[in-house]
Image (cartoon, rainbow, N blue to C red; front, side):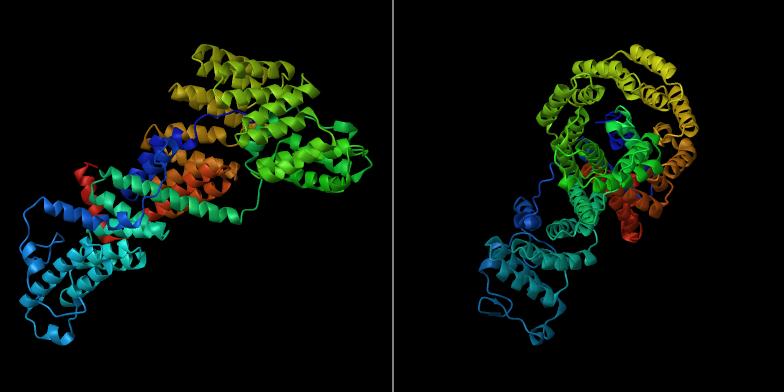
Length: 613
């Protein structure tokens, strides 16, 4: 909510560049993964699973139904998987039977000619098919197993795997389909069946590999398999993210994010009379914390985090009541503690602190902070109630109207958003973000000239602020005025280097790299240089890392790309962003695996040739 709402995620804004990088990377199979991630951003599949036993066995039954449409095969055709002929079902058994199942010994087999072995095997397969159709899966397994005693045939392994699938014995499904695939690498029925069992057993990596193989066999035209691949990739990525979150230690985000957050609030340095000359240690901690926050530097934010914790401890907030002499100062320390925890993506702890602050001595800012936490939870009614509570304390507190404007902006009410941003600007003319948001609203409302005029006026008021040219550059980029946009991003980068506060940080570099990457491969060297600089400037920028990872992938620097994708996932704030970045990392790992498989490499080249790639 704080700072500027930059509508549209990085992924959505860079879809073309991502797809190009993927196709130009180490294999065309990457294209499917990256498109899958984009589909998730745009809506994608609903993520529901149909990996039940009936779908696992459907490969065999589907093929049987196809056979019904054709003339019945001659008895003894060991290569078919179709339905048994009437003659075979009524004829005397060629092979010995005991207790209703085949009873073939090694001695029996030794007496047979190769032709007789083929005939017995074919009869056993067809009788096994009859058992399968009658849902007698355990008995069918005996017949297919007996057939395999006589002849190693991929069809027999396939049919037996269908029985295991029907029995939900997915370990054996995987064993049998694997044997069939060894004999016939592009045995699509078995590849799909194995992928289904892998998914059910949550072995998502191998499921993804099999589904990727199927998309390649289908020349990248099998939409149903692509949807399955998308689903499994998402499941796999969610599983990884959830596991990583178990051991997560909350950390401050990018300094640019923190600056954008606190920059939208009225700056304060001596609330409740605290100063550098304060005698109480707790007051000194709080004063120094605010001083470091106002400095708006990466080092200052880290120091402020420590100092705020020290202030909260020194005020002994657990023992205070609203009648205590230090209630007001302790409440302020708790407010900032809540804000820091919110920025660390720890909303539960942030809520505890802000509730304590409100219980001790609420200020308008206390309710605004709580409103932001509620908006983050999509509790918009509670957020509105908090804004109303803040107004009751001070209806002229500017932060109320800026963040209320953000809420209206998020919910698409641009008229109300504009009214509130105007009031926020009037009450606090030093809030640069209010000017930016008003200009963005004009542009979004279809008044580009008014937006440009507002950016020009804002640049005159804030001549040294990199915020104005950075976001003006984004507007120009959206208008496809690439040259003018790049000039604005260059100006923003130059101003950022000249000022002590972090402000926009690496964003101008990332934005320029983003639009240049869409202009063609000839810019990729400059793009890589810009993004490398962005990562060095802001080590906590997930956007810088995920952007650079795309370029590394395009340059076939696969291992570096994987590391950058994983770092981006760690740094990302939301679960959705973490899952998306992880999806890229896991997709890239899959490309390495494909490249190391000669058979798959040949199939990829064949599919690419067919598509004219």
